[in-house]
Length: 301
Image (cartoon, rainbow, N blue to C red; front, side, top):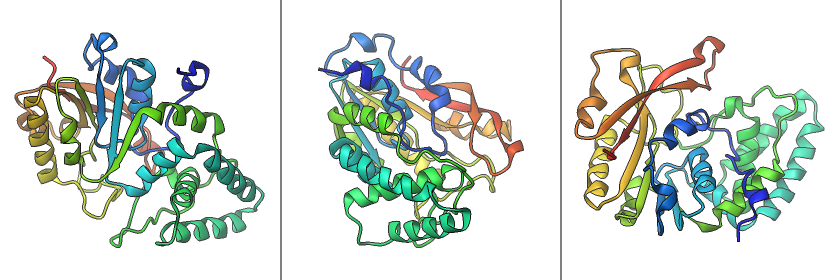
């Protein structure tokens, strides 16, 4: 039985570049109108990221029988697993880290942060240690970015936060409650194809196609996600559609900078494409924040 008082507090436990917190209502309107009436629904997110849509959908539709999440970022999925399976231990460790960090002066905080980042980039961490370090770094690094260098090592510098909330106990417990019916996988998005069927609903939020050559400010993985990957994703959408699955996908809108760039209009020409206005929340410069057009693509007619 669901504990609604706890579950209704569920939201992303990390900050995330490209997070969909400001678009939940718009994205929700793109899902099937009768979703709340369906039984045996399997909800699938092949690029879960911060999970804003995941937590929103699972709260709004308690009839969803099962959810499956996946991400190429193994440290992120390890953290989801710790939140699901060992949340009280995670809270205990994070609370200790929070007390230590907030008691330091600026110089000592930088040293503490660097030591934790070095530990995160080591190969000797347990799953719980990975989760503690992941959340700590996310809450204290510059703009909550996740970026790796050519060697796959996290390299984001410390941010300037006077009193960061490192251990959000209520959110972690609420998220853990919702995650009890969620399968967690790490790897390429195509491995979620096995869940495609007439009861499956996919939300796809891949790394966005950069609007300009300089706008790809993060390297989420060492491999990247170029136009060939975007085309591979479209072929994946074709296959799950043939299996009877419903999908909604988000991506950048090239028309923001070039009205003649019809890459996605051509790529998804047999699907429904909607342009929506989205807040741009993360930018190194204040004047780089504002509103921008994004795409919602779906096979729902």
